[in-house]
Every structure is written in structure tokens, then in C-alpha cells.
Image 1: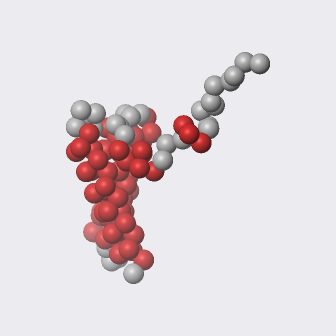
Image 2 (image 1 turned 30 degrees about the vertical axis):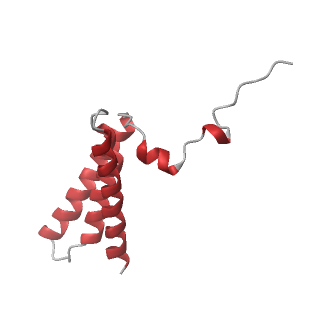
Length: 105
């Protein structure tokens, strides 16, 4: 019988979490959609408290900013600057986690 090659869903070919952070960026429509969506959420979280009599939520703004950098801009950066992309990804993750902690506390 003929040996079949590994399927794309095999355990050996699945990327790990660290592979996702250290791989070159893939500029896709998903990255563009994420950049636009989280930009609009960030603007809304900053503008709505300015026009209404509500208290600002800095945790939500930080989460939106972190996700914007992590899912949007880091994927749209130039692939030749891999170290900068990795730094942006880790920094964005730290910003989003800090915002989550501020929001929950």
C-alpha cells in the first residue's frame, strides 16, 4: 500500500502558541478587519465618556489598544522587521492583559 502524507491537521504540523508569536506576519483580510474593528472600539471607548456623563473605562481602552496592536498592526508590518514585530506582539499582549486586570479589579 502507498503511504499517505501527513494531513494538515496532524499533531506535528500544528503551530504552537510560541510559533504564532515568532512567525513572520501574514497580511490578510483578517488583520485589516481586526485593525479597523479594534480602532473603532478604541475610539468609541474614548469618545463616549467624553460626551456623556459617564466614567471613563481605561481597562477597556487598554484591551482594545492591545488587541489592535496584536491582531491588526503586528500582522500588517513589514516582514523584514521580524524582531520589531515580535516586540510589538509581546508588548501588545502585555497591554491587553494589563487592561483586563484593571477592568476586573
